[in-house]
Length: 401
Ligand SMILES: NC(=O)c1ccc[n+]([C@@H]2O[C@H](COP(=O)([O-])OP(=O)(O)OC[C@H]3O[C@@H](n4cnc5c(N)ncnc54)[C@H](O)[C@@H]3O)[C@@H](O)[C@H]2O)c1
Ligand SMILES: [Fe+2]
Image (cartoon, rainbow, N blue to C red):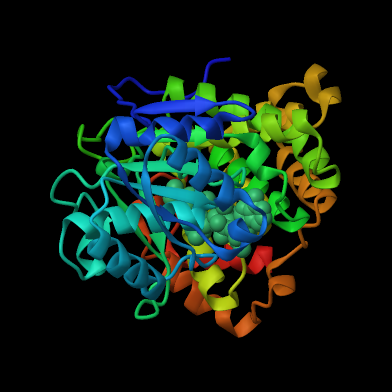
């Protein structure tokens, strides 16, 4: 394999330490010793009901931690929820914040860790590199596979004062510890497994197909496609193609859960360097307009965006296609590549992803406004291998509709 890497310097960063394995949650016993005794946990009611929160608190307490739990986390976490959790955390003055749950609770923990250290409003930190210095250490414990937030420099926030989701991006947000225990994902409902798994696939494919960015400063958050992000993205793509349908259909299949947890982690490492692109830029306004999960919107948009970047990423598309259909191994790149979008669509259909944006509740008359809002997400669109104007984005939305 030789992909378009250009001739340039790139950088790579990830969580300070990654613990992975069935039962890795027991590592939480060492949190107090590493970071200090006062632990603030950000989680939600589903984690309480699944008994996961109780396990986590017990492990922390075994390590002599004092624990305070905020269990009011919400899917697609919003600014008000963050403010409520932050008020509780500020009063408690924790040494460390633990994010327990899917991307929503992990992002909540990152935002809380900013506001424990620095004054509000949270909007002061929106955008890239706007956090003034080190934040309270974050330990991320994902229960979906997933967003990759456990290793990413990003927190995504739904702010009712903004028409689209906003990102806070800074390497200061990268968790100090990522504890990836696939056993915690077993209680995920099938739809959550499917949506978050397709989000991981979108991370892998968008990083793998991202632009190379020889113009980047070492301070840039996303530095473009590079050999290391390609390595992680290809590993993740192969595993998701093979194991996502099993993880959805047989929730107790340990191999499928472990492979998906690893794939999500690797895809997170890939996009944390290379960046996500047009799929994610378009999902932000679509998600806000329809109140549908992040991974679901990405899954619907992904094949159409793939068709639109095809000419500049033939080798990568051929690789993706062959992972989804082994019979393409004997075909030339140019012939295999064209199959990739349809094969991704078929994988989505297998795990219950609807065909188009209409099925998500998007109205035809909303498309121009959605395209206009997506066109403002330059932070992500700059990673696309093909430059998309507002009218290109509208055409993509019409095709996906
Ligand atoms: N920070 C990043 O780098 C990054 C990357 C991608 C997405 N995101 C954000 O992450 C969010 C989506 O995260 P997600 O897809 O993990 O879903 P989520 O965190 O929103 O969770 C979805 C639902 O599943 C439930 N759930 C999660 N794990 C469970 C389990 N093990 N058992 C039972 N129920 C469980 C949650 O309680 C919630 O109701 C979005 O806000 C998205 O914008 C962030
Ligand atoms: Fe995502």
